[in-house]
Image (cartoon, rainbow, N blue to C red; front, side):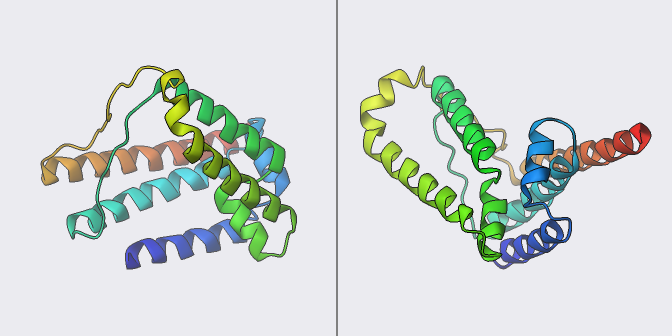
Amino acid sequence: MIVALICGIVFSLIAQAVRLNTFDKIVATALLRSTEVIQILLFAIAVSSVAFFVEYLFGGAIVEVKPFYLVGIVTGGILFGAGIALLGYCPGTMTMALAEGKIDAIFGYAGGILAGLLFTIIYPSILPVLGPNFGAINLYPTNDVAAGLTVVIYSALLVMVAIRLSHNKKNRN
């Protein structure tokens, strides 16, 4: 938990320093005009993946993979993306905006909480339309050494993609 807290604070400081939570940056990312947000998120996922695995190894976290419903995942992704496009914040940048006193972030939180509550209430009745259940798809091997190697390779790939995006950006300018 401490590792996650430290990583969260570091990520927040970096995100705040580069003004990641501005509408312009989010929209530029959505329109594929900027890769800055994508690069920062790739680095954050890489670091948090390793941190989560360390926490998992020491018994501070569990891996509980939910069933994969294709229609449900696609629909949820579209709704989530539409929410980001309408509000101009993702959940992390919305928290930053709220901390800065931006009132519009309150509506994002309210909408997210209400949508989550509604989904929880109607979930049993919409289960048949979520598509086939492909089960719990998990890339984590059961062997801790193999799982650790998987996490390190995954994180390294994310960092390499982020660095490559940075080089592509410099070459275009």
